[in-house]
Length: 157
Image (cartoon, rainbow, N blue to C red; front, top):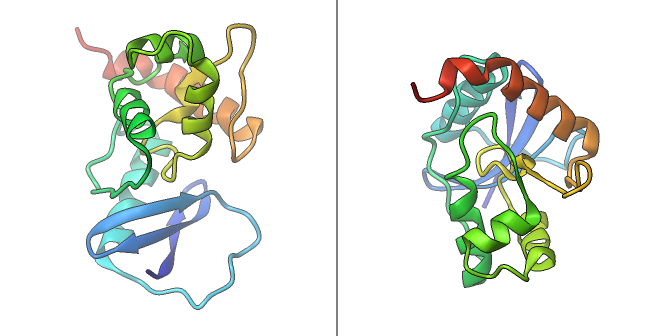
C-alpha cells in the first residue's frame, strides 16, 4: 500500500490508501520517507479535510478501511455518532459500547485509531481535562476549538 501527500490549509498530511479507501492518516511532521504516490482518493481527502478545517464541512464521505479487534471497531463506530462540536469522556464512551468499566480499553482503541479526524477521537476527553491525543494535545485543542467555533452551523435544529 502506498503513502501519499495530502495538502490541506492546515499543512501537508500523509495518507496510506488501498484502492479507493483510506487506511491511515498522519498529521503534518517531518516528511515520511517516500516515494509518494498520488491517487484520486487522496485529492478527495485533501478537499474534505480542507473544507473541515475551514469550517465548511462537519464530516467526511471518503471511504476508509479499518482493521482491528472487534472491540476497537465498536469504539471507532461509536465515535462517528458523536455530534460535531460535542465531547464525551472515556467512561461515557465505554458505557455507550456496552463496557462501562472499560475506559482504559477505550483509550487503547482511540490510540490505535488509524484515521484520526475522519474517525473523530479528538472528541473524547478525560473526566478531568483533555486526556491524550496521539498527534499531540496542541492538535486536539485546535480541533476542539475549530468545532466549538462552528458548532451552531452544524447542530441539528
